[in-house]
Image (cartoon, rainbow, N blue to C red; front, side, top):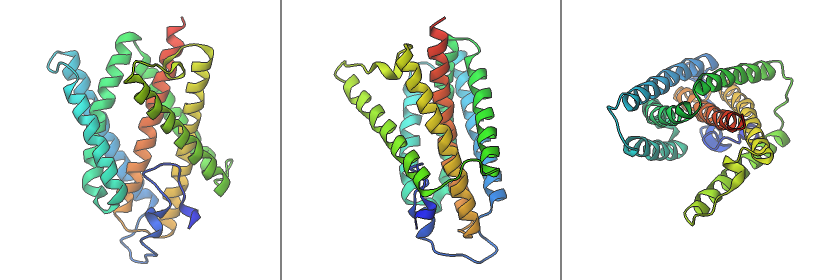
Length: 248
């Protein structure tokens, strides 16, 4: 059913529909998903903080650990996309692995622009709360066309990033991604906006899953999908702020 369509690749249209309807007491709830999200955030922030401290204090050197954790997080995400019933076990693992990557990236940016991480965190929280309020008040209606638009934009951004990665292997740079010029900043604003709107689609996905009484383990999977979007939003805000700071 198109009702469950999401632009978040971890929260796809078929995730709930392939399980059918559930009527037992052990089913997905919004509050349960919120609780799981809190646990995943704890793991992610703790891992990020430990990595930050370890690298800043010299206990960790080089890029090996962040790279290994990044690859591990990607593999876990792929597995969960096909096996959401494993989310209770693998979602915390993803949060820990991804947290190490986030901690490393945050430290790098903060070393260039002191205080930028606090600003990015604050803006991410504000955007999250604002979008949650907007969703609850139904200011933005999550229609099928809206979901398709966000899905298309998200896929386009992903393909653009993939293309830039491939071109970088041949020493060809794509200025829009890292440029602090007008078009580079506008591109980052666009990506931040799409990442933020993905939150609205994710909220709808979780609410629809709870209404359909999806299996209890889908609380972990819903929280995992929301965490993926939040991390993406934070990193894009961090990139945007770094561009703005570099113009000073």
